[in-house]
Length: 301
Image (cartoon, rainbow, N blue to C red; front, side, top):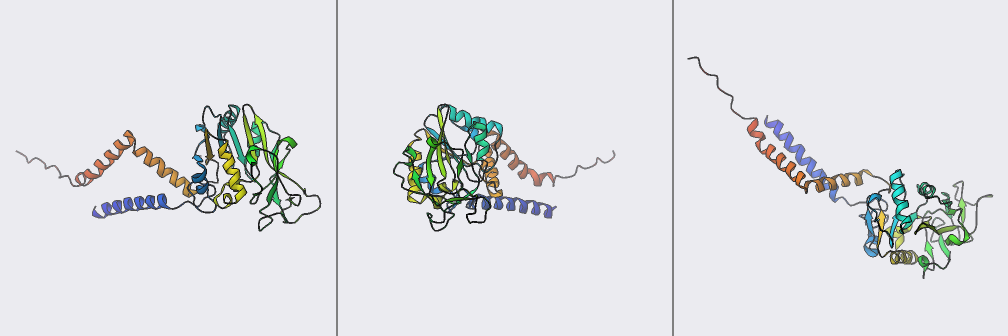
């Protein structure tokens, strides 16, 4: 019995230790608000006041002056798409930043003709150290690109089926779409200026398409033009600027942290405290239950 209690106590200690380790392990996941590394968004959120949200169901009912940034790496439920559409129709701004994710699913539901081409946009001449980092240098007069002289994208794509009056930014004349992924321009592949940022109206709100989500990560937001673009975006969002995290690339670490957070939240509520007290009481009485004296048989009279 002593060995049984020892093993039970050891298992409990190991579980608590593992929970503490998981809770304090720093995140290194793409676009996560708690990630301070090059691929996170911690710096951006700290400087721009962007608020991370873990569900699209909590969008403001009166979104005029509010903006939600959506990076659609995972698919959407119909209810989520309807929440986004209602948010825009009532006056909100959706920034849909995508390259090879599920952005076209959102656009289809919203009834827009525009699409993300999902082909790599390369620029062998006008770039930042590599053709995978094209410089965006052509802009129309727009609140979003005010005082922006250039942007630097990172493994981006382009936009398709965009009307001329919807274009906000374009790549250089040297850029091309690498349709066959051989990193070279071949006969038949689109070349020249490509739309990479556009604006569209829907109801009382608007949709801004950006053909690269990477401009929001810590390492790319340090680029002067990128930083200015994000500053302008915050400036048109007096009612709040939000970053949706519910459609980012999933990971076991993030799911474990969410489970721990939900458990901690439960334990701070009356029902959770009651369950914790019952558990503590049961553990306290456990030795007594296993060492209670046997009842003596009555001797015959």
